Every structure is written in C-alpha cells, then in structure tokens.
Length: 383
Ligand SMILES: Cc1ncc(COP(=O)(O)O)c(C=O)c1O
Image (cartoon, rainbow, N blue to C red; front, side, top):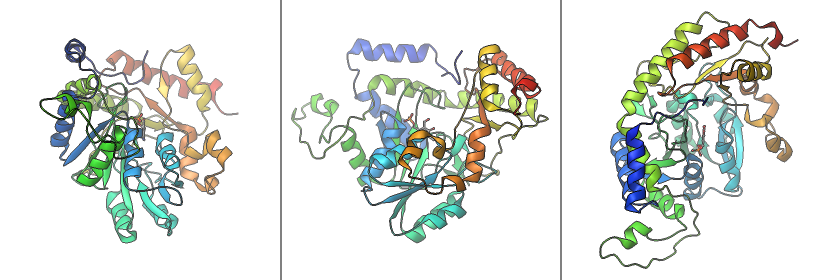
C-alpha cells in the first residue's frame, strides 16, 4: 500500500539500467537532456537539475544574496522545507495566513508583513492551485523584493495563461516520489535570469567551475577551479533518465489523474467535507493533491488511525500548519502563530486522498468507501 505511487513502466527500468551498463551514474548527458527538455517544454531560458526542491529553494535564496538580517515572507500552509531553507540561509521566515478558498498565501496579509528587512516572498502553489500572482507580483515590484516560487506541487500549474514558476525570479520544482513527475528524489530551479542560474549551478556542485561531465568529455582540460563555497546538490543521470521517461508520458499521467480527481469529486460532493476548489478558466490547477477538509466534528487522528489500521487505506495530511511543529515553537520565531487562524484550522482538519496515475480504480473506490464510512462513524467523533 503506497500513497500516490509513481507511474513507472519498462521504460524507466530500461533507461536506469542503461546508466548502469554504460557506467555513467553521476551527473552527465542524461541530466543535460532532462534540463533541456524541461527548459523547452515549460519555456524557460535556464533549468538547473538538483537533488531536491529543497536544494532549489535554498540555492535560489543563496544566489539572491539573502542571509542574516533579512526577512522572507511565506505561507503557514506549506511543507517545512519552505521554512527551513529560509532559516538555513540565516534569514527570518515571516508567515502569512491563507485564503480560506484556495488555501494559498493571502496577498492582503503579505502587504502587512513587509518592512525594510523584507527581501523576498515565497508563494507556494499549494496542491497545484495557482497563487494570486497578479497581486503578489504587484506587491513585490512596488516594494522591490524578489519572488521565488515554490512549485513543488505546480509543475503543471498556470495562472491566467502563464506558467507558474515564470512569475518570480526563480521557480523551484520537486520530483519527489509522489510528485506529478516522480524520480524518487530530485528538483529543479527554472529561471529566465542566466546569472542566477549560473550561480545556482556552481553552488550545486561544491563551487566548481566545471562539472565532471565537462572535464572528461572531448578535449576539455581535466582541471577545474573552485570559485565559490558550494554544496553537493546535483542531480544524477539515473534520476534524470527516469525524469525523461516521466516527462514523455506526462500528458497521459495527467489525464489519468484528472479522471481520478473527477471520480473523487463526484463521489463525495454530497458529503459534509470541504472539497478542493478549482481556479478560473484561464488558470490551471496541477491536480497534484486531492486535499479536503474533514468536518469539525471528526477527530482527524482517530480517522487516520482507523483508516490505516482497520481499513488499510492510506490518507495523508498536507500539512499541519507550520507554527504547530515543535521546533518552531521551541525557537519561538513566529510571533503571530496564534493569528494564523485559517491555516491553523486547515492544518488540523485536512486530509489528502491518494492521487497519481498509478492509483488503481479499486483503490480509488476503496478510499471513497472508507471516507464515507468513517464520516458516519461515531467512534471517531470529537467528544
Ligand atoms: C510545498 C513544498 N515545498 C517544498 C518541498 C520540498 O521538495 P523536495 O522533497 O523535493 O525537497 C515539498 C515537498 O514535498 C513541498 O511539498
């Protein structure tokens, strides 16, 4: 039993095997091919393949020179990664509450948090629903601050006809095992700013002026310089070769996910749950997570326990609200933790249903059945 498993076939097995038989398993031709494909497909001038979206977010902030003394505004409804990278560069994360309808950062809240220290906003296109980029970009431009888009859920998201990831200075994709493009672990920074792309690329590999592929191909000099204090965040050819296969069948995977999405919607629309909303016509939801709100009277912990152990059905949580986690409480970094009313409420009641092209029809039916059953179960009600 796996939550949102990847949709793999013979092609992923064969292409990974080819990396093993040809002996080049590190970063090489496949990484370059994968970068070029994403670059051309998604219309960016630069794409830097990395070990994760976390690495992409972190290196983006680094490349923009964000560090101690700076503040970065983001949402309270995201994965901890978005927050941790801000802390890792030495800056202070500042949280905004979310819009009750789309669960994305509320632009009205952003404006209130801006001060002289604010250097960037990280909007997260949560579940694949596009953030209100018009308002966010207006605020950012007016205040001369950067926008780094967390597109972990948003490889296929568009806002008013424009691809998400292309509004801010950098967009960061995740290719984690459950994502729309799944390669186990992996990420990518996409940008139309070549200087930033170059900085990210160099920092992703120790600060070397040249990677191994360049050093050992053709008549290139085998030596390199170290031009920055870098990290080790590069993607490997084995990961990229899976990514290429996934990209080639993305439209097929998307249409299967859309069908599952519609089945979930149609089957539970009568239930007392908060259903996901969709953006207007000229915007596209990537349909990465089918995330719903349980009624207030349901005890979510008991729901998840019973679903898991009694009915062997996996539901997930995306996410508890950021201030609810112990480390952030211990650090006491969010003065407004109790004011994030919408996020704190959503964090307590949301669950996600398994959604990927590899989810079998029988599993979809089972999730719906178990959900309906549990909604009527007096044992999981809050007292
Ligand atoms: C909103 C969000 N941001 C960032 C990340 C980090 O992605 P990765 O696991 O590729 O580092 C995730 C991962 O799920 C995410 O959901």
